[in-house]
Each structure stands twice: as structure tokens, then as C-alpha cells.
Amino acid sequence: MKRLISAVAIILGGALVAFALPPARVFSLPLTPMEKLATVNRERDPAPRVRVHGTITYFEPGRAAVIANGSNSVWIATSAAATELRVNDTADATGAPVMQNGLLTLANGEIIDSKTPSKVTAEPSSWRQLASGSHPFDLVSIEAEVVNVLRQPGQDELLLSSKEGLFTAILSRPNAPAPSIGQVAPGSKVRVTGISIPLNSNPFHSQPAFEILLRSPADVAVVASPSLLFRFTRDLRFPLGLALLLLLAACAWIWHLKRRARNLTGKLATMAYLDQRRTRILADINSSKPLVGILESITEMLSFMLKGAPCWCEILDGGRLGSYPPDADRLQVLREEIPARSGPPQGALFAGLDSTSFPGLHRSYLHEMEILSGGAKLAMLAMETRRLYSDLLRRSEVDMLTNVHNRRSLGERMDSLIEEARQNASVFGLIYIDLDKFKPINDRYGHHVGDLFLQEVASRMKQQLRSHDLLARLGGDEFAVLLPQVRNRTRIEEIALRLEHCFSEPFLIEGNSLQGAASFGYSIYPEDGTTRESLLSAADSAMYAAKNFRKEAAARLAELEAPPSAEPAPR
Image (cartoon, rainbow, N blue to C red; front, side, top):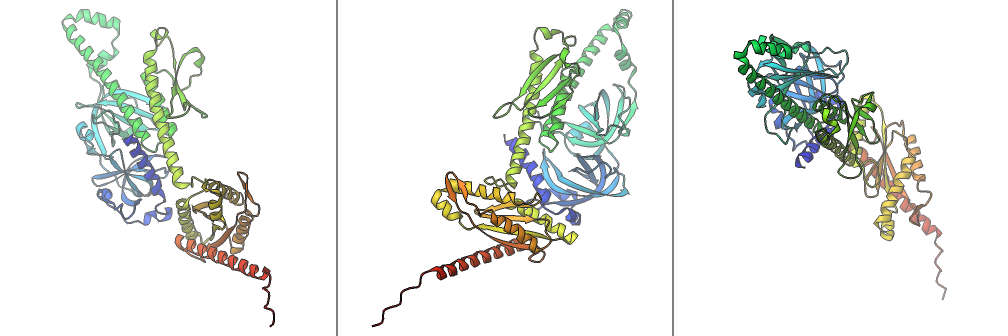
């Protein structure tokens, strides 16, 4: 649970820092050396944003990029378009430094490519160096033997074995025309070049692990072809093997031992590969990767575990993800619900099994159901994490009583509008609203009726605003309306008059007829202020001036309507 709360806090922190600086000013920040990113002063700024400079060593469109400077590299989460960045160009990048899975990264990144070439040389490394995490996000090269090649829609994977351990090299191909890894025979010795990614987010295993992100098919270079023995044993068929065993009786025992060792190695390699797939899925759950991609990765892992059987996921009130077979009606379809922490199931996972591929299916399929059950638990963790993150994000921006924006959300939108107005020489308006008769309602009818009254007031005012206007509750009985598209004070006064008409009719709440009233004050940028504070202060002062004027007018009217006092009779 602590790991889940920590992961959500990291994601939420990364999302909040996106508002720390206006987009047009982020690249005016001073350069921060990469080795000093961990020492950024968070006491002075809880959501800092920094700028770094270096050479682009990796770019995956819509997900991330890596920038290297000297012996330091940093992972930058960015949604830049595919044509914006080019590997081996120098670039400036900005982002918010956050710790993710124990590694320092930049969240909500923005990158400007200078189009100036500056090639970074890959550093030769060993399995133990990379597994220890001493080269996070660095451009490295390593030699290993190919165990298996897995080609999937969108990416190719090489399962590799060095003398010290197993790892994977991945080439992402988000665009269909992108070239794939060429024909690489198992048993070949290759040199792979790419970005080293430590994998340390799996809470159930402490064994060090890593993977290599390839940039292009050219990052895989064949150093040596498979040995004659490897090719011979791979292509061996039973009849020929039987004949060779008869001719080579003296070597039969040695061959038998080698075969057993190879089978054991294959099983261990498959187990290690599945462990790395689970580790990568857990890392994606703790990151900002879309939920759809995570669920598709889970169905692909289940299909691998079920010998290639088609697996898919159906979300409640949603779509179908994964590999749904066109001949599903002739398959034995297994179903496992995706549970929720509370309430009905969130969906279900399915596997279509062919009895010819699973001979024991007619007797029992407990093993297959165990595999589906494990996948359902992973899917539940991913969906609950995304739901918790969405709820926390909404709570940080919305007033939970009236379901309108809160003070923080209003301030962030005002800062953004001020920056846009400075660039475009435009204007915008702000209306400050204070309810005049809320305290007597609260005192007479209680807080429950007072809360319902505030909800009805917010609903009426929201109906009088345009789609691009922003209504926010500042606290208590105070509201504010941000008007992005106004040209003069006359237009603001028209909208304020519409809001004032909201109080013309009484509010019918739980059998009580309540008459409301409000005082309005407004300000306009840049005439009344050029900062958030000055605009709020000007609108607040105008509101109190209007409130005092109304009180004085009511007092004078009361004096005029009062009957004259009787004069004393003469003596």
C-alpha cells in the first residue's frame, strides 16, 4: 500500500509541476548541470522546473527522450510529435525533476532540437555493470548470445544471454512502416547498442535486471554466426537423430547431457523473460503510460504463457482490447473477471483455447485459469491505480461541494491567461461575487440547508455563463468568474447583470423559500492590474464598494420611508 501511495504521489507531483511556469518562458530558465538535478531546491519552489542541455541519444514519439551530457544522461517524459526530434542532435530540454522507481527523471518535458549534429559514442559495458544500475539511461553497447527473437505488432524483442545473466533488447515501432530487426538466428553472437534502463520496480524480486532500448535496426550488429553444433542440434529431426545416435554411440551420453542442459536453459530463459515482462508492466503501472497500452501488454503476456492462445480484455462500459479471434465460437473460451476493491467487476479477461493445442483441456484447465487469474490481478492493480490518480487530480482542481473550480484552479488559469495576454496584447475580465444573505440562512436553517443553497447558487450562475467562462468557489460564500473573451467593461457589466438576475427568484430548498442576494465587483486586465493578486484585489475592492453603496442606499431609503416623529405640543 505504501508503494502504491508513493507511486500515485510521484505521478500527481509530475502533473502538478506542468503549471509551475508558462510554456513560453520555460526555455528562458538558466541551465542546470545534470549532475546537480538531485540538488534542486524544493523548499523554495515545491514544483521546480529546470532546463538542461545535451545530445539526444534516444527518442520514442509520444513517450520519452534521453539527453546525454558528458557522463550523465537523463530520461525525459514528453509527448512530442514524431517529426520534432532527431537522434544525435544537440537540444535544450525542460521538465520537473521527480524520482520514479528510484531514478531521477524529468516529467512533463519539452524539448527544442537545435538541428546541430553532435554524436555520442556508446560505452562498452558488461552485464554486471548494467544490472547494478551504474549506467541509468546511458548509451551503451554489450555483446551477448541470441536466445530468442519475439516479433510483435509495434515492437521487436531480442532475448539475450551473456556469461553473467539474461536481458532483453527492445526496438519500438509505433508506426507501421518503421523497419524491424533483420533476420537474426538464435545462437548468434551480437553486439547491441542502445539506452540502458534499470528495472527495479518489481516488489517481489530483488534480483538486478535491466533492458536495452534500441533506436534502429542498425543497433544490432552480428559479431559471429551460430556454431556448427548449435545449428546442427537446432535442425536435428528425430529420424536423423536416431541414426546419428546409433553411429555415435560413444558420444550419446555427452549429447544427452547437453540436451538436458539446453532444455533447462530454455526453461530458465523463459522464466526470466516472463519475470522481466511482469517487471515492465509494473513499471508502466507506476508511470504515466496509458491504461489501454498496459492492458494490451497484459493480454500479450498471457498469450505467451498460454502457448500463443489468443487473449483479450473487455472493459465494463468500454471497448475490447487485445487479440480477439474471428473464430472464437469454435474455441474453448475461458473467462476471469477483473475485480474491483469495491463494487461490481471492472471487466473480464478471456482466453480462447484450442483442444488440439491443449490435449488435457477436456479433463481440467486449472493451470490456464491460474494464469488468467494472475493477469486479472495485474489488470485490477492498473485500473485501480489510474482511478485513484484521476480522483486525486479532480479533488485538487474542483470544489467538492459545488462541483465548480476551486481557488487553486482559478489561480492557475489566471496565470496562463496573463501570459497569453502579454504575448497577444489581449484583455480579459474577472468578476468577484459575495453572497449577502448567506449567514442568516446558515444560522436559521442549519449548515445542511446552507450547503444545498450554495449548490443551487453555483448551478444557477453556471447556466448564465458561456462555455469558455470559468466559475470558481474561493471559499465560504465567495465566488469568482474568469472571462477569457471580453473586449471592454460594458461586456463584463452585461455578464455581471445576468449573474445578478440569478437571485431574482427565491430558492426552494427542502420546503423552504430562501431569498438570496449578492454583491458584484469586477476588474479588467491590464487596466486594473497585471498580476493575479492585483486583479483579485481590484475586483474585491470594487465588490465591497458596491456592497457598502447598497447598504447606504438602503439606509437612506429606510429614513425616507419612516413616519415623521410627532412634535411636542406648545405650552
